[in-house]
Image (cartoon, rainbow, N blue to C red; front, side):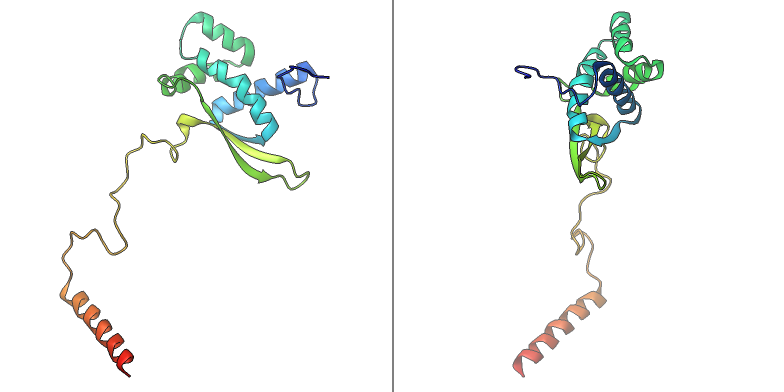
Length: 164
C-alpha cells in the first residue's frame, strides 16, 4: 500500500525513473517544449520546477546542485544563461501542461509540457504586430465614390425586390 507516498513511480525502478526524468528535464530545458504522456509530465513538473527555482541564483553552489540532477553541462549552461533570465521575476509555475488527446497505439493520454515564458503565443508581454481593424476597415479611410455608388445600388436593388 502506498499511504502518503506522493511520488508517482511510473512503473519503473528508482534508477530508471531518475534517469528518465533527468533526460526529460534536459530535453525540456534545451527545446523549451516536449511531448509526453500526462503522467510523465506531472512527474517531470515536480522534478524540474525546483531546479528552475534554484537557477534564479547564479552561484557555484546552485550550479553544482543542478548539475548533480541533470549531469549535462550544456543544459546547465542553457538553464542559467537563457531560462533563468526570463523566469527571474516569476514566483513559481514555470511549466505548463497542455493536453493534446490520446495516442493512437495504446490510447494513452498525451500532452505537451512547456516552459511558460518561452511560448510567444500565450505570453501577455508581447507587442501587437498591427492595430486591430474590423473587416470593414479602421474607419480612418474615406470611402471612395465608387464604393458609395455600389452600396446605394445594392440597397436600391433590395428595395425593388421587396416591392415586387
